Image 1 (cartoon, rainbow, N blue to C red):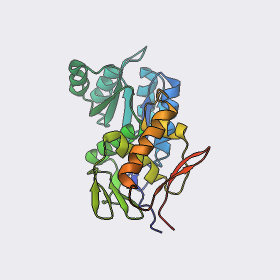
Image 2 (image 1 turned 90 degrees about the vertical axis):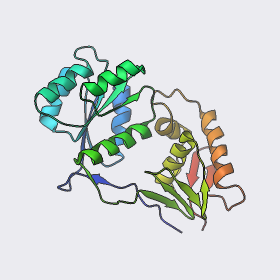
Image 3 (image 1 turned 60 degrees about the horizontal axis):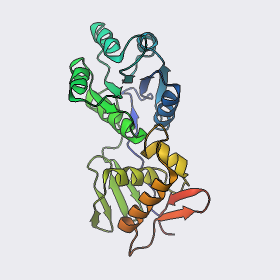
Image 4 (image 1 turned 120 degrees about the horizontal axis):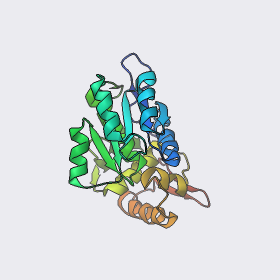
Length: 244
């Protein structure tokens, strides 16, 4: 049995856990993001308003921030402007419910480094933060080869290449995220609800039937004509594992 290669662990240069500050006035969203980021082994703090964010940024000294633009007291743009004025160059990933070009340009012009538009997948936020911290040099990866492996199946998290037994497999963006989540949890049963949380929208907007549909898509591309890797655990969820 081939063990899964873990996603490259990010740490501060001194070896301590990277720190991420999550700022949003929606409690459910901050809870979900915190859960996802802590699963990466990161130290996470949250703030529910712009003024709380400024205080937390001073106290916590984060390596990256997830910052909602629309907040009731001090919006994300104003928070970022004050941080930059104070000399902070912390990488910032904006969350926004808006998707117009003008809003994107305004966020980046204000000093933001990247943005995601609500609704989004938690996996996307994790991937964007990893990229921001690596580019900024605030975090270092211990494994330069971000390859996940299960049996003869490999997935490159950077290049998005998926190969099984030497054959390259073409996946859509959603199929890739679903397969990555399964492979990160090799030999662990994940429920439909967990998959919806991590691969689809943070607000539980998906339905369990969409998980079944995409599992069937993956099976056709990954398992058809080969020994199956993706297994259904009836009444519980799905699991990926190498053949015994």
